[in-house]
Length: 206
Image 1 (cartoon, rainbow, N blue to C red):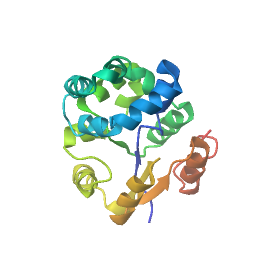
Image 2 (cartoon, rainbow, N blue to C red):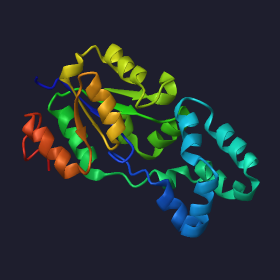
Image 3 (cartoon, rainbow, N blue to C red):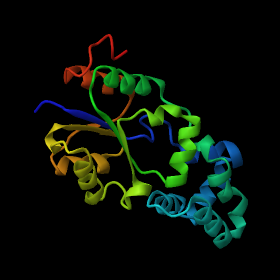
Image 4 (tube, rainbow, N blue to C red):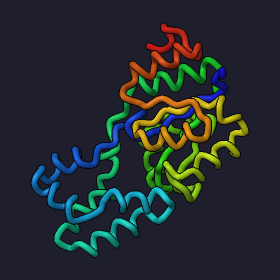
């Protein structure tokens, strides 16, 4: 089935998202391991991605674990350092698709405030034809509801959507609804897929 629109995840597809790497550099690997063993920081981030207030959730978590309070607050105060750097080749692919007239959407687990913060540092995030952001949608990947909302919002048949994400469970949930999918392992292989789908020329995919 020909692809009518392409959907990008953002974290680890367009922007690197490696909190553990950040904390290893900021506080040392041993301290990071101890903190992540004691505190469900990714669960905390899921609350933000569902739409809870970013600062309030981080401050609440820091108060609950005072022995790690300073480090936990870095999830707010130095968040942009976790969400970096941008993946330049992926950005070029997104822009090449748009130049080719292909509708390009984002589907991302992102908080309302964190997405607004990211857009200030990464203006390309405002170039999508539409960004489907979990914090505004009240659902997160891989819950079926978020994919349903994308289908309703874009009005394109599921089998004509091509979605890339770095997490297998998110890909599997989209595939279960009939979406075409690509597990993102790097921009070069993603570029090959876009060329194979006749969405980009080899030259445009560089």
